[in-house]
Image (cartoon, rainbow over all chains, first blue to last red; front, side, top):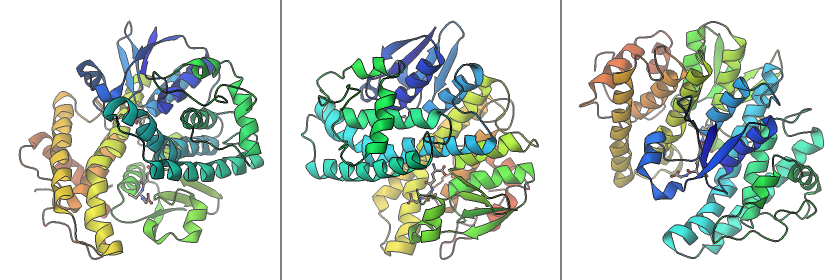
Length: 223
Length: 223
Ligand SMILES: N[C@@H](CCC(=O)N[C@@H](CS)C(=O)NCC(=O)O)C(=O)O
Ligand SMILES: N[C@@H](CCC(=O)N[C@@H](CS)C(=O)NCC(=O)O)C(=O)O
C-alpha cells in the first residue's frame, strides 16, 4: 500500500491527498516534519521536503507533489485530473503552478512561517506586518479565482481538474491559519463550499496540527 | 510559428529552447524583461514571468516552463524527453523540479539578482556574501550531479531526458554569471562539455545579455 510522508497543513501533501481521495487510492499516513531534518527522510528525498509517496512492496519512492500527481494520473484511470486536449492540459498545469508557486509564495508560505514554524520551531511571535501583507495578497488571489470561476465552471474550464485540487489545497491551509477574509468573494466561496463537502476533502478538514487551532468556520460547509 | 517571450539568461526559457531545439521546432524570439512589467506581457501571463510561448495563428498562449514542456512533448513526437515507464517519468519530473526549484533557488536566482538585476535595475553593487554563499551551494549541487552521472548515463537514467535539459539550462546561466567553479567535478564537466556541442545548445551559448559579459570559458566546449 502507498504511504504518504506529510504533515497536516502541508498544502502540497493536501493536493496529493485530494487526488488520491478522488481516485479512490488507499494509503496510510506517516507524520513528517521537514524542520526535524530526519536522516531517513533526507535519504528518501534530498530536498528534505514533503510530500514523499512510498510503496514499499513495489520499491517505489516518489518525490515532488507534481511528479507524484502526474504519476498517479498516468497509472490510475479513475477520475483523471490532467485530462482533455493538450491545450486544456497546459491550462491545468499553468494553474497548478500558479497555486503552487504564486499563491504559495505570496500567501501560504508566509502564513506557515509566521504561524507554524515560529510557534513550533523558533518560538518567536509572528510578525504582524508580514501577516497583513500575506492577507492583502490573499485578497488579490481570491479576486483572480472569482474571475476564473465567473468565466468557467471550474478553475481550468468545463471540467474539474488538478487545478481545483491545487487551489483547494492552498486555500484550505491559508484558511486554517486565519489568512482568508471571505467578504466580497461570493464566487470562490460557493466553489469552496461545494469542495468542502466532497468525500475526498472531509478527512483533511477534520485533522488538526498540534498546538495550532483553526478559526471556527474552518471545517464548516456553511461559513 | 511559435514565438518565445524570454531574455537570454532566463534559465526556464533556456530549458524550453533546448527542448524545441532537440525536437526541431521552429520559433522566433521576443525579448521580454520581466522587471519592465509591460502591460501586454502581464496580460499574457498574470505571473509576469518568462517564458511565455505564443502561437498567434492558432491563438495559443502557454505559460510556465513545465506546462510548456509537457505540452510540446505531448504534441510533437520527435525526441520525446518525458518518456519511458511511469516510474522513469516520475524520476525525470522529480529532477526537473530539483533543478528548477532547488538549484534555481540556491544558485541561479541569487546570481541573477546580484549580477543582473542589481546591475540593470537598481544599479547597486553585488553583495559579496550572497555571491559566496551561492557558489558554495553550487558546489554541493555539482557534487549531487557528479553522483547522478556516476550511477547513470544521463541525469534521470539510461536515456537523455528533460532532466538533462533542465540541468544544462540552470548550469549554463550560473556559469554565464561566473558562479561555477569546475575544479573537482570531472563527471559533470564531461557531461556538460558533451552537452555544449549539441546543435540545440550552440545558439544559446553565442547570445549575450547586454552589459553583462560571461567568463572566457563560458562558450568553449573545452574548458
Ligand atoms: N515543489 C515541492 C514543494 C514542497 C514543499 O515546499 N514542501 C514544504 C512543506 S509545505 C517543505 O517541506 N518545506 C521544508 C523546506 O523547504 O525545508 C512539491 O510540490 O512537492
Ligand atoms: N515556474 C516558472 C518560473 C519562471 C520564472 O521564475 N522566471 C523568472 C525569470 S528567470 C521571472 O520571470 N522572474 C520575474 C518575477 O518573478 O517577477 C516557470 O517555470 O516558467
